[in-house]
Length: 322
Ligand SMILES: NC(=O)c1ccc[n+]([C@@H]2O[C@H](COP(=O)([O-])OP(=O)(O)OC[C@H]3O[C@@H](n4cnc5c(N)ncnc54)[C@H](OP(=O)(O)O)[C@@H]3O)[C@@H](O)[C@H]2O)c1
Image 1 (cartoon, rainbow, N blue to C red):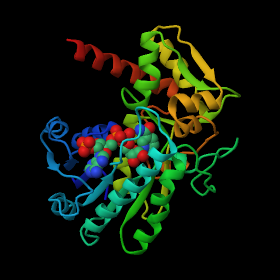
Image 2 (cartoon, rainbow, N blue to C red):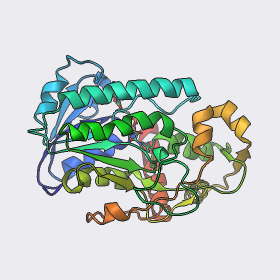
Image 3 (tube, rainbow, N blue to C red):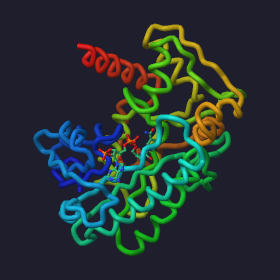
């Protein structure tokens, strides 16, 4: 089924950074969305034509959300325990891992494979982690880094669920930048306030970013075009050194901007092991498989995408200050 032909989509993580864009893209292309949220105030912000807000917590095995899931043509699963903000220690990441596994299990148990044609499971490229200097595809041997080791148990459970009949397609977004989440907190706000953007000492390490709008459109696209049991990287055409995103953002904001490169031990002290490790490896990935399904990017590189994200962020800021 094409992704623009009016499916009923059950969306977890609808109130999150990427989920908000998936919701918008889904409604704009004529889908109906059952959008899950645990919080009444978050959920109220989702109310719009084509959206049915489902109050619920994936950890609640008896929740009414289970009925909505059973009616879905497609499920896009973005919900995750909180990741960013504050220091991310290994212990915090271990708790994340356990909670994520539990949420996945609850969701998968509730899905009716006779009704639901596609489940797009959203993972992350930190699972592939250290890929060295070559551009890799989805068949590369993973060397999880950063959040990757804590995502690995969930990702490695997916083949068992597929074997049990669940139509899962696994999506691996790279560094998803846009006018919120980590990009606002660690890059845009420091640039605006004249604070340094922290990085890791040593040679530039390449990473594979993607604009949040492209990421959202790609997830929606995979509900119609992804092959069950396959993995898809959602990344720009070309990897870039991690600090390039801040350089482009500084230019778009019209500020000089200064990066401050710290040794691993100091970065770890400031932000925790997991975040420090997220900056410590090379991850150059190919979007060839995604493009071969017919997907095209609105922002194929961060040279085009970051100025757009900055513009959106500035508009949000001035709306908030009004
Ligand atoms: N952001 C990135 O750069 C990036 C990169 C690669 C991959 N990813 C992956 O993309 C996915 C979404 O990331 P994001 O940054 O958009 O997430 P996010 O902003 O942290 O949002 C998390 C969402 O999960 C929901 N949630 C948390 N616990 C829940 C529970 N027990 N039951 C139901 N819903 C729950 C929250 O909804 P309520 O609080 O409203 O209930 C919220 O909407 C994640 O799987 C992440 O690993 C993200």
